[in-house]
Image (cartoon, rainbow, N blue to C red; front, side):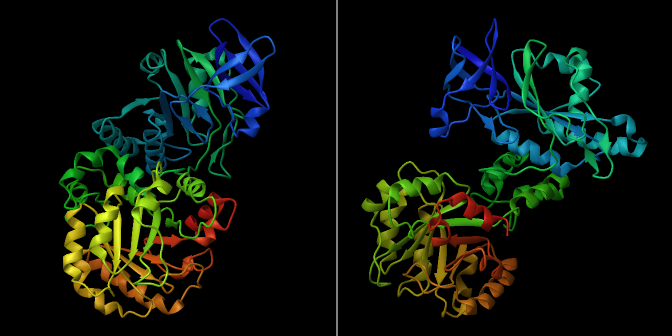
Length: 485
């Protein structure tokens, strides 16, 4: 029989069909297969023995709160006690958009605002409506009720925003427990202790534990950018392909902020979000066994890039993969590829590796070739171009090329060997490049000896990390320790 999980308390799953409800347990094999049924799941179950047999494919899921197959999310947003936070609202919107859930903004506690505060709030309401969001007030009961039919909805938002109160006002029979604001904490007390789908106006709605902070779980900075929906209207007019609307020149999104077409608070929140953690490019060179399996494991983490070190045995003593060896290893991976060529014949390797459509190809300044030719050749392949310098190379040698490239890779160890110690003499070099970034459109990447101790020593946009991640059984734990430094 097929049903939907509507409630989970301890290890008891309430599974609902059109006619009945059943209290079920999950089969033991789920634990071995690392499958955890969650509220919202459609499941196949044994109604006689009350066991869940199979979890059907999900169209989406949230990690916190754990709910699956959601159609729409009501973001319950307090304007007073706790105060309105554009940062928190925008964070909810980005995460919900990313998960392919329709967001609906609902403001609460407007009766606590004075005239000036209400006028300011109306500016926000007008803007969010203009860019395409449904915006309602918690007193718009009839309009709210119409939205539930045939939908699975989630009520979420800041603690103390009034999620449970609003649900009770929509249907008094729900009788959801509420509590007052904790003024000592400056936020609401948690009154909902579990996730449950409740029947409401021919649909289902989840009342979930409140929380006042969120993480962009599994999201890259590009994902965050793409889910600021109004940016997409103007990004095609930016000078640079894949413009991040941050340090780039001739950025149409930044122009629209200056013209007050894009609300300043939205753009400022965006900048805060993309600076939320260190960007990590995980080097697969340090993987020594079960290479394909562990590359896939790396790909499933929250890294921002997959770093591919390509050596020809001539520019550096070691030799790594050719394209025919590497392509099967990375087949099926999704993270953007960051290729570092430590080779003499750069053009040949660009021709070989362009077929995997990397985001960056970086070559060494120290190659005995026409640097501007190589820069232009890589750009013609619609690939971002980087130049790398060895630890002993004077940073001044790269100055003539900075306005033409997208990335500078500073080697913090001698290229060609893994597992070396970080060379601290390169720190002034990275500092100088950070100053030069103010006048040019490039980002900085550092590679070599990066771990949880050395990462804070250099101010870089991207950190290449190898053995610190791959020598651990828990890749994600190591990555988290680096991102949040």
